[in-house]
Length: 259
Image 1 (cartoon, rainbow, N blue to C red):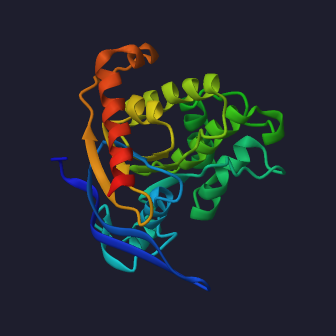
Image 2 (tube, rainbow, N blue to C red):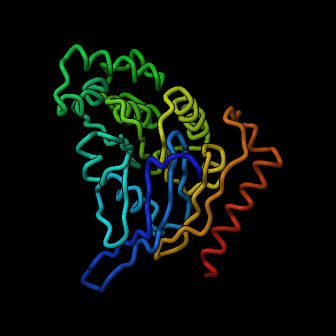
C-alpha cells in the first residue's frame, strides 16, 4: 500500500486480562491503510478482526505498539468524528423512526434541525431508502435495517467508515444486493472503508486490499492488493482473476493455521 496512510498500525499488541489468565488477541500487527482504499479483514473466528477494528474506533485500547487514525490517536479521532461505525447488528432504536434513528448522532453533535433534515434526506437517498424516514425499524426488512444503519454512519460525513461484518446475518441474495450498494456508495463518496468479513467471496468482491489474519493471537499473514477493476459486476466472481485471488486468500488462511 503506497498512498499516504489514513490508518497506520505499527507492532500493535492487545492482551486481555481475564480470570483464567491473559488472552492475546493481537500480536505484532503492522498495517498501512491508504486514503480511499476498501480494505477487508478476513480470518477465523477469534482471530482479532473485530478487535482490530474496535481499536481503530477507540472501543478497545492496545497494550503495545502504536495506532493512528487520520494522524491522531483513536481517542482523538473519535472526538473529532473522523469515522462512522457500522456494527454487526443494525442497532436501531425500535421507538424511533428511521429518520430519527439517523438523526440521533447529529442531535448529539448539536447540528441544527434544518441541517439534520438535509443530511438525513441525503443519506437516505444514498442507501436508496428515500420515503422510509417515517417508518419504524420493525416495519423494514433486515437488509433495509442494515442500510439504515449505514445511513446513520454516513450522516455526519466522516472520511472513514468502519464496518464490522454488517451483512453476516443476511441471506445470500440480500447480501449480494448490499455488496453492490456498498461498492456504489464507496465509489460515490470516496471514503476509506475498513470492513470485517468471514466470507472469502465477499472480501474479494469488495476490496482493493484483503488482509488475511491468523488464529489467535491475531497476526497478519498476507495483504493482497486486488488487480480487479473498480467497476465490478457480480458476475466478475466467475472470472479466472477472481478465482485466483480467492485461492490466495484461502491459502493465506491455511498458512495461518500452520504457523
